[in-house]
Image (tube, rainbow, N blue to C red; front, side, top):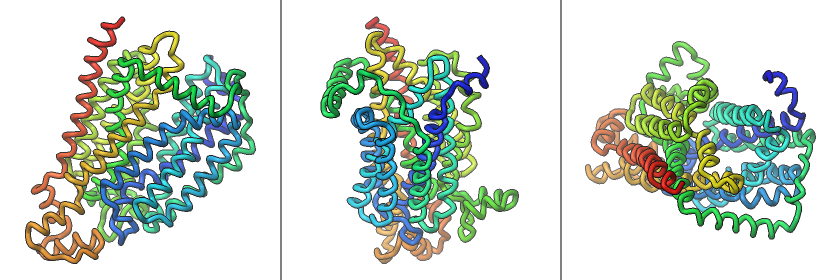
Length: 479
């Protein structure tokens, strides 16, 4: 069957749902890609100057809850109806984005983010369920291929838009609110998929109880739980793209050479995504190359690994991901960083799609649907673990704001604690008769902030070894 024939089989709701997903991911990543630096950045640049630990709690725990809640919100959507649930989700999204500029404390931001997570959790199960319901076994592969393409396009263009207003951080949230509001128009054209008879039986409360019984049933399978814990290592690495990497690039990576390259060849890019005063590029613009690489190379990578065994693809992907992430955090050279992001993206494209395939393979034949439904658990755990690494651990080992204060104390340099992070750093540099970059290099050499990469690389390698041993000695032994 030709591609045109397959595409012609999709109803209008399929295309409407995919466009809704595009706008939702656009709005989400438009703020989330900038969130880590917004939380911990210098106040003179609009940052809140929260601690790295605060950031870890907000982004780690908050996002983990977001990925757990759909097991409940999915049941709500089945009873309430998809259109009504989407309407409520969009209202929560918009109101949360509008509340963010008014929250400047840990408690305030955490509370608003949890509220936003509720909106995302209401939204998340609906579009994928819609795609599944309006596609057939014959068209589902292409249907979800289009769906994931929309996810990555939204993830790519979202930060590119909001970064143009980074000098006014509040505009980041207002833009995301506006993009989400466009979905109200699309909702008018969205047709409710038919409900399955077995879904509408019982109350929402009974459905939730049934869901938790299923979770308990899944957790009784120790072998499966072990696999989920191993896969959580991948998601722990992946989340460093948002939790750690933007902050690390902002604090440590020298992006001046990239700025000058764009200024010479593509000045509109350096003018939009660079800072002429410091001659640096925005960290989030660099991190966003991951989404660009996926858009450009996903089909090529998928065609290469589609015939590989799921285990081999995952193990290879994990090694490549770990290497890419480790190299990204290991150097101050921005071109090395971009190359490392490409390496990570290749590993991500190789392994991520195969995780679901492997779950389907190891699940008991009479419980495949049940087990596949709880593939979110590694994502949930990965956010929790990533929050600790990108929060507490990064704060102790790699946070530039913390390190420069330690350095000033050790050298007996007195600087006012009322200064912003940038002002404090500049004051220390002046008293040392150094430029800001020279002080950065000095701190890099003396305190080795890149040592956090050892932990991230170790997680990746541990996941590979554990997965190999799991498949060899636990899964095969039980067959």
